[in-house]
Image (cartoon, rainbow, N blue to C red; front, side, top):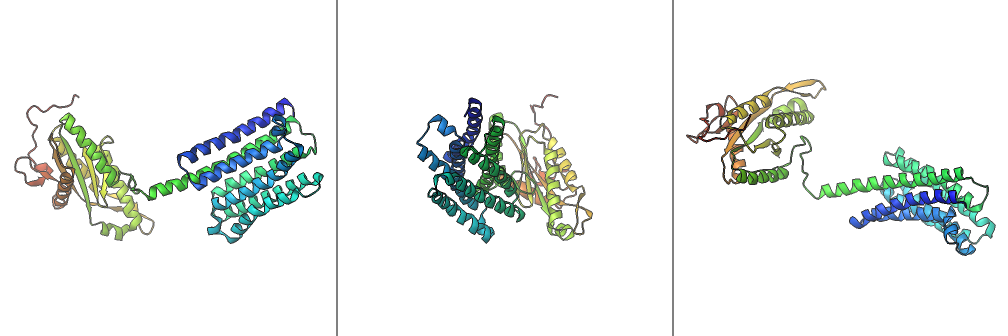
Length: 414
């Protein structure tokens, strides 16, 4: 092996080792069986390339008999272990009996055949090991393509990795057997195939493992956002409201909490179906977020109740403008897809409750309850927006509330 060929194979081994180290760090951070499989896969490929490429013999030449045994066993063992890991990756036992039986059987048969190859005459051992490895690789390729045809989209990338593996294994064994003199360009092509196949396989192993981890983590916690409207969920919303209330105690500014209740959803559902109702929720959430501004937290408190918090208001009369603009915007017709596929205009039956928050501590539960009661009572008002009159404490439409700026009110600079 000349210096240029040694550099080529060392670069390929470096790529494989880098992937192995990255997955090892992932394993240490979050130990799982799938991550252990990925690390073991990259290490087996690293050893395969190290033994068959001639780098091991060049770096530290072992005894000829030991080197030959390693070369004979490297291919069958690597392919057999890969089939064992792919069996779990494809969830073969749950999907296809033929796939499960062949992958599980080959995981044991291929290393066994590699051991039997050591009993052959010395000149026949490497050719037998190459044939065993290629046979196992073809089987893996066929089964991953089969999994792709059965609907596993990630299996196509795995199949491409297996496809690149076949010429890489054939070339490595040809290199080990000294069948034909391979120039630097040919060896560079083999090294590239080995690195690409390892990278492709490692990528799909990582992607499926990441999806599985996300599924497990989501199953054990409440989602931070409502899946339909993408607004903050109730838990996230309350956490943001508490943080905003803490800031208000420091700044001493007036604020407001707004609740929007949606009524008679059954009528809309009978007209446009569940998909149309979801479109209505999305439109209402977008309109509410637009009216309150992106800097203010808005969330879905429960199924038919949206809540928004305005941390700082410019003046008390501005609450009238806020309530009326929000009510008018939400009562505009919403175009959704009907049951027959045509676009249908629906009107949301809403009520808006506005609660003024003066400086000082407040209980978030009391404020939320008050806002929902106001929104419920607003349904019977013409403007559909209600609040408590600061003077009489009676529930009135926002346009009738006696809202006048307090003395000394600090208006924001224009």
